[in-house]
Length: 79
Image (tube, rainbow, N blue to C red; front, top):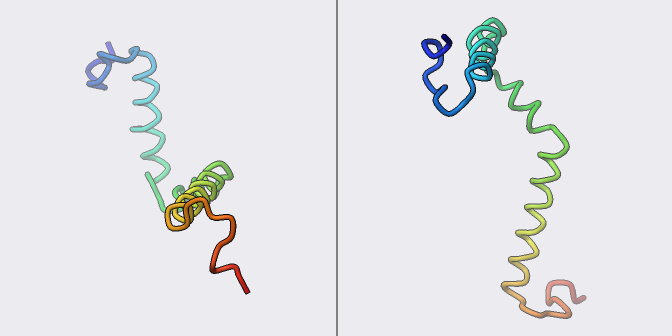
């Protein structure tokens, strides 16, 4: 019944595909679609920010360990 509205229902249940069809094609179209405010809201969420922070920190530590392997002191910290 709903396969005419959504072509990818082969792998998904018909009811889930129909609910997705209703939300995306009808309600999101009424809201005006995607805007940059949505992206800004997503990026300001705490898990996203903490993932970016810890990923950057891990990358920094990996690069320091690559240039100064097994270092107990670092030359750029000595005064």
